Image 1: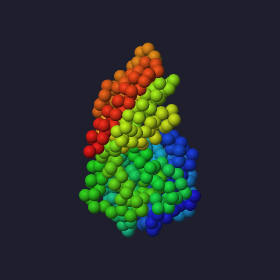
Image 2 (image 1 turned 120 degrees about the horizontal axis):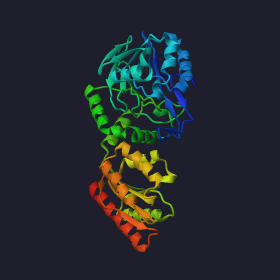
Image 3 (image 1 turned 135 degrees about the vertical axis):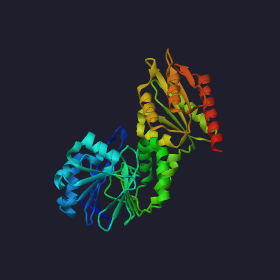
Image 4 (image 1 turned 180 degrees about the vertical axis):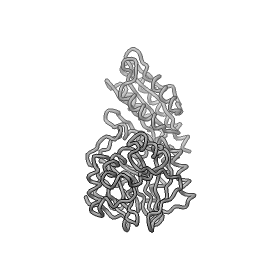
Length: 398
């Protein structure tokens, strides 16, 4: 691929990773991109680099525009290796004495932990500015969005926000902008938020308030992954507000795994009870769904019901995997309940409830534990639990 001019004298020079399918436990079935940007001005400036395996693509695109040795400045908005992995090779190509501008936390990462003191790192202040000619770039510190070093770079002249890992998607395509693709990109943005940024939702709300107070205007929002936004800018910002507020919908998820279908029978009965209350309910068999897709569904659900067989006095392995993953992302504002089947010990329900307690979710029922195969009485108890959950969720939605 050739570089893409996204505004006069500003180019996308990143790389498309068509084949990646796992990103830290996140299913990336559509691949991803590593976006980097070249700003041609009196001081030629490269904003971010790429994963090391793709640095050849980056250099080739830059070379279509200018001799890489003419680059004056490099900006590192985020030091995670998918954005800074190519930095040593880039600096070797353009000159290791050229300044690299980064946040103060970015300076710590780059100089002490990643590439040590071999380069000319320049730590910038929140609100600091860098003149590169007709453009002045402003740096906005965005700690924990989603690393301590994260920052945005804003080009006031062109009203372009280079926003690191915010507003991104793991999505590979030949198109670069939201108005060029036929597929709805918002589900990909939602999945990205649910699996990477949800844990930082309170900080995101504060950041968006800060940006609003600064009165920044955007013609283009340029994340480090996926497509760029120029048509649906307001839509993606409003979505980030909504997702960060974690206002639950009238929607219940019944997440489970099963050994000999007993837990599955219970899940189906709970679903039936929830549906009787006019609440949308969705069963999710863990072994047929990826944890990152489950998390995306869970983000705006108002109720989460988890079921597991007891295996060796503990939870079924797939269930504890999903619960551990969910717990790390700290979802809020959900009611929950547990259910399970067992042969002779029956610890699963107690262990699920323990996980719910650690997540600080609202357990509305102690749960149901059934030995071996549920009879009609057991299934009716599951339907009753479902009705209780549906009623509670309906009342919360009023």
